[in-house]
Length: 295
Image (tube, rainbow, N blue to C red; front, side, top):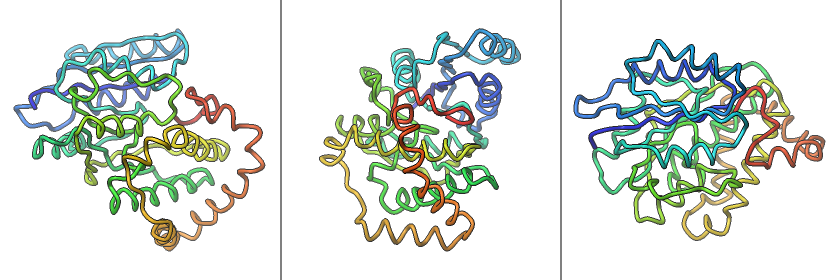
């Protein structure tokens, strides 16, 4: 591996993009690995696009490229554009609204440096602290997923779109159908189908902002369910799942850490039937129209 490309999909979030580009510029990478390019696929209105371009002026020394769409076309479209454009040996995908440390990218790439059979590496996602019901519910679910990813790294919960490294050899001919919701799972399955292995970098920490609204947190649950259901037939053939008893055990492990987060999660799930008729269609759309305060 000699070079890395960074890909950032965004939707009306110029300040987030500017912040993540600055974090990328401060990444600690080995001398033999260069930043080939930073490609931003920006779905935004003209005001946000103008603010983005103005904010990026201070990064003229970086190999930046911005692809602008004036309407919301979805993550699959953004990733497909990135797959078709990158020149680096590895593509690192970061959501625009995440926070990364200086060592995050190197830790994400390290498994590939040590094992050439690995085609995809998933980062460890952690929510930023939030006292809101939505924030506590999201934190509980993220901690539960973290347990599964740690002990069952070959499950359908491995890849999270907030932070993934994938070899160009995997994605150079890949085009994800635009209707796919769980693009990260699709990419994981495709990687395995090509004969590559996948890995989990538990020390590659990526922090993200939780939803401000409970309806968005519930929407995330519905979206995850619908996205995995879309790919169920292929997933069941390729990936293994922890037994239900083990998943329940992980729930209790997480519940012991915080009574407040546990109660917030129980409340959130109890409200799913109430919100379901109002948000199901938009939650289970590739464009996720429900989301306003988070991606």
